[in-house]
Amino acid sequence: MSYAIYIGRNHSRTSHAWLGGYGDEPSSHWLEIVPAADHPAGATIGVGVGAEADMPGVRSSIPQVGHTLRHMRVSYSYYKGVPAPITNGGVNEKGVAVRDVWSTSRDELIAMTPVDQTGPNYSDLARVALERAGTARAAVEICGALIAEHGESTYGGNSHLFADADEAWVMIQFAGGKGLWVAERLGPDAIRASRPGYVLEVPVDTPDHPDFLWSPNFVSFAREMGWYAGGPFDANTVYGDGKGRWDGVCWIEAEMAERAARAGKIGIEDVIWAVRTERLTGDTAGYGQVVPLVTPADPDLYMMWHAPTGAIAAPFAPVFLGQRDVPAEFGPHRYLTTGESHRFMDLRKAVSGGVDTVSLVPQAAEATRSAVAESKRLMYLLHLLGEDALARATRAFAAREAALAGRTERLQRVVEAALAAGLREDALGLLGEFSASEFRAGLDMVMALAGGFAAELSALGPVEARQEPVAFLQLW
View 1: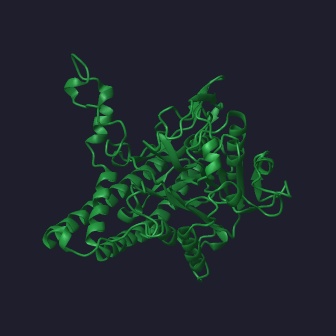
View 2: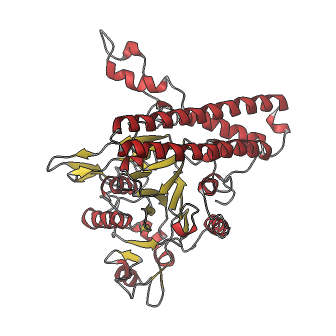
C-alpha cells in the first residue's frame, strides 16, 4: 500500500513544508545516493512489467534524457512481479521529493487492462521524476507526457505525491490501459495523507484551473462508459474505489490538523510521530522517511530523515545529498531480497584459480550488520511484549531524535559556512562522517533495545501464556 503525508508550510513551526511516509512492500529495502549522469544521444531505459507480473505486460524501452539529476532514494526488490530494483521515495538536487502510494481503480478498469500492456510502471515514473523534474508540477507533466506517448504498466491503479518547497501535487494513475490520470495541487495550507492516494471533486468545467491537471480523455472516457453524465466530477467515485478518504487517512489528517492549530504548530517530532504511530505502521512498512521541503544555500545540503524499517522499530537519522554514500549496514543485504536464495557467495566458488575482486562487493555488505534485519527483530519483540515495551522503545527513539535534530542543525550551519568558504571536500566529508556515525549509533540503540527485550521475553516464559501482543496497523 505505502503511505505519504504532506504538511503545508503554513502549518510548520519552521515555515517550510514536510513530506513523510514509508514504502509498504514485502521485500528488502535499501537507501542509496545516485549521482548525476550524462547520457549519449539515442540512449534508452527499460520500463514496464513482464509476463511474470501479477498484471502482466511487455517490457519496452523509452528514450533517456541527456542528463539525469543526482538524487537519493529508497529501492526495494519485489512487488507483484515488477522488475527490480524498484524505486519508492526520495529527493533530488532540485528539491523535488517523491512518494509512491497505491490507489486502486474501479473493477471495470482493472478488468479491461490489456495483458500486453506497455509503458512505464509506477516505479519507473517515480524514478524518472527524481532523475528529471525541477519542480513538483514538472514531475506531474513529465509523467503525464510519458503515459501519453508510451502508455503505463499498471498493477491496478497507483498514485504519486510530488512535492517541492512551494507546493505539492497528488497524481492518480488509473488502470485500464487508457492513459487516464488526474492531479491535484496542494498549497501552503494543505494537510494531505495518502493511503490510498485520493483526489475527490475535480473542476472539469474549468480546464485551466491552477490547482488541477488531467489527461485529455479524463472526462470523455467517463461519459463514453456511462460513468459520468454531468455535474460534480468526483474522481474517486468515477474511476477509483468509490470509498473516498479511508478511515486511517481521516484520522491522521484530523490529528495533524489539531497539532497544526497549537501555538507551536508542527515540528519534525510531529511528522516523525505521524510516520511512526502504531495505528498506521507495522511489519509491512519497509522503511520510514521524512523530507523537510526547504531551499538550502547549496544543493548538497538537501537532506531527508531515514529509518531502515517501519519507524515503530527504528530511529530516524539524517542523510544528505552531498555525502558520497551511505553506510553498508543500510545498503542492500540478502535479508528479504527476492532471488537471493539460490545464490552462493563462497569465495572458493567465485572463480577458478583465484579470487574475483568483484565478488567481494556483496560479501563486504553481508559482512556488516543488516539494519533491516536488526530492526525487524526489535519489531517482533515489541509485538510480543506489548504496549509497555512499545512505549519504552518509542520514548528512547524520540529522545534520541530530539537531541539529533539539534546536532544536525548545528552541523548544517557549519557545513554551509565551509561551502561558502570554498572548502567543499572538507564540508562534504564532514556531512558523510556525521551521517554515517549517527546511522550506526541508531543501529546500536536498536540492537541494545532488542537485547534487553529478548531477556525480558525469555524471563516471562512461554508466549502463549502472556498478554495479547500489541496491535500494529490498527487503522488499515
